[in-house]
Image: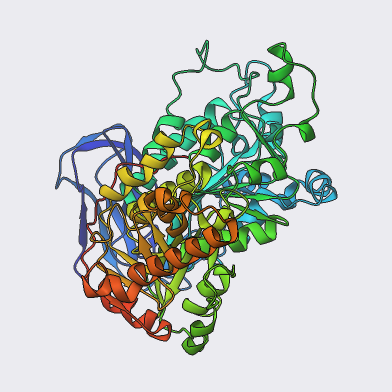
Length: 601
């Protein structure tokens, strides 16, 4: 039988010879080990057989193609094929020592390895960071970044203790699908150093925020924690003010949806990140503040408990919290629902009977009504998500769907100040319009306002600047608006509801109850006919004359009259409103890159 010559596959040094002359070998058995460029290369038997000659010894230098051994092919009884030997690819259950160590280190950071900490967490009525993430992300889709990171405290604590007590340096972060679309998810772990911001988890945040920007991923941040951590020792940092996380996160504003969730205590740096989010969801036990008790006391500002700082009722009333919820489970469900509006249309939808819209506005123009009933009747069934309900009551801002397509919606609330726009309502609407513009949501504007709130008390609140935000924001919108005048459309306030003018929307229509004017009818009559009214001595006669003038003004200003001079595009049957909205907004192009950021206020 012809001998097979085994040659060197490269230039190198013979590190060892693994067989002897006359030895039987199976295909794949090691014959010689070569060392080249500090790497070992095993030369294997190309076929089963008997080694007849060895032409090298340990320490020899060989060139590529030099002979190493001669092999006489033969059948080797009882030799297992190389692919079936332990340690090969076919041995799927084999766990080597190095892999076992990696698996053990990953297990240390899981909830199952920290039963006491988890029990303490559950005793407070809250879930762990990993439980929240598992609930938020579609099953099996979360991939964690940096799970083996530990706190930068090697100079003061043993390494083993840091591995066991500070897994992930208190920040669980990674990418997972939410509703079938990838999202960046980060959660401070309150079981690790009270969810504080350490040197290593700052670096981790930097990495995550850069990836979110690069991949255009929405971000969900569970922000519970106490802010900056003073106990890290393994860095040359003096102040820590050179950390990039706040800059990188703020830079995401307007580029991707940002969702912040607060449960429990959220102070200082954690609250700063929370406040950068487009929407803030907070549980009823949340306390949110730019400084915690230690910082407040250290500044000589008094001694307070955490529960006294930024409780949920305060932060909802002042507009910090967009969506108050009962607990973390509801917070996660709300976050999933919120993100769904930025994930495109849904195929399946139903709508209420549109004929019911005809009776929601009373015929008596002075009778108040529930504008939320109008919104619910107009939108797809169960598709309304109202933001900041506890703040700026004069305007309602909501995410809705119409025929499955997501929209932003603003509406005056006649139950508050008769629908007049005050400072908080203007701020709320302007910021919501920015949010819609940033993320490509067309806007539906339901107008019923007597105008901006005026008077000495109003001017104490800097209304000139606050009201003008609506005009500046409206003038820079690149998403389309469709305006529906439900009842009153008076003065600058009505123009602001349309982006600055009734000509800005791609469609401006009115219901039969619509009325338009440069200012409220009553005010216009009192101002325009002051001399005539003052000339009437009898109060009853004067009031009767006033009512007649108002009625005449209404006839001139009602929507049907405005339509004759084309100030509105049409006066419509309320039951036809959805068709107008979908027709007007369906094919209007929306630029991919819109505004630079969403104002936090």
